[in-house]
Length: 71
Ligand SMILES: [Zn+2]
Ligand SMILES: [Zn+2]
Image 1 (cartoon, protein in one colour):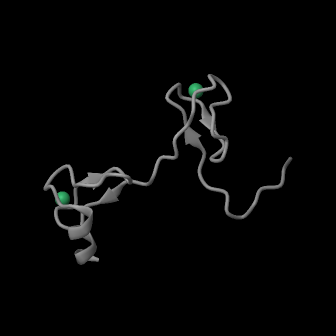
Image 2: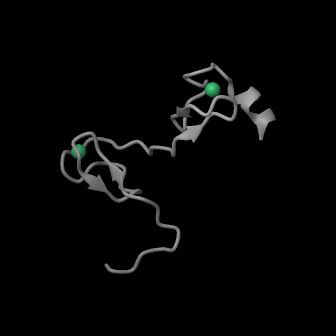
Image 3: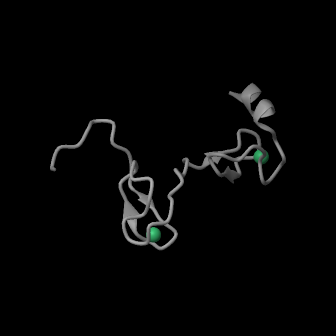
């Protein structure tokens, strides 16, 4: 198929290095389950780059609740 939906997002990279379609769920090469990786988010207080699913800033310990007040 050459048709792609408009909402298509970036391919996800498996731990084995294979790029897979974002909605594939499993790696097409090694079969490992692929977790959606969220975009890194800079901390609003110290600007450290945190994982998209991080609950607490790695650098200054700012929590999600506290971070919301900065937005
Ligand atoms: Zn893989
Ligand atoms: Zn921080």
